[in-house]
Length: 164
Image 1 (cartoon, helix red, strand yellow):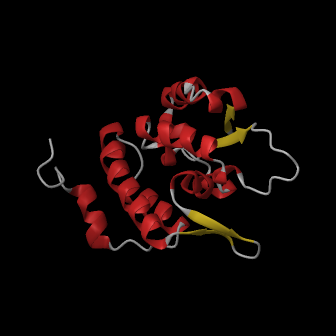
Image 2 (tube, helix red, strand yellow):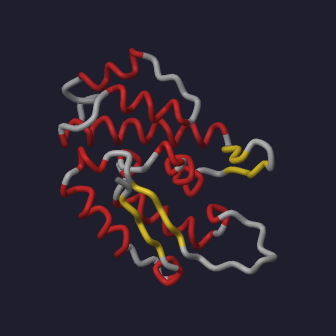
Image 3 (cartoon, rainbow, N blue to C red):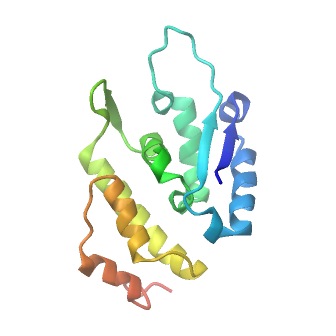
């Protein structure tokens, strides 16, 4: 059952994270059940002559950048099957659109994004006692990254490089 974030133009223009906070209260009430259930509906009017995708509009991107700083583990909840993870990444990672191929991310920026999210999620999933290594592997595969077992062995490490 999808869980929807409704994001208004007013919230975007004022960088009001209230809709995001309310969504996170909902998903954190039962995080295991909310995994990969979040979809985003963004109401940001544009003129018919404006060819930009939502992720190309600076105000929309800025709202998502701000939201990501507070909830960096959000990708765990996004509905990957409906393209929400790729759309979310487009808000945070430099890219271009191609009529045939869709989103073309900057390769280096995408790699940094994926690994940063993997590290965040490794720690967060362990703290929450949620998910598994396969969840992380599947997330990386959405972007075409095959994560090696040695990297995922960090999941089992008590601490990552001495962090508390």
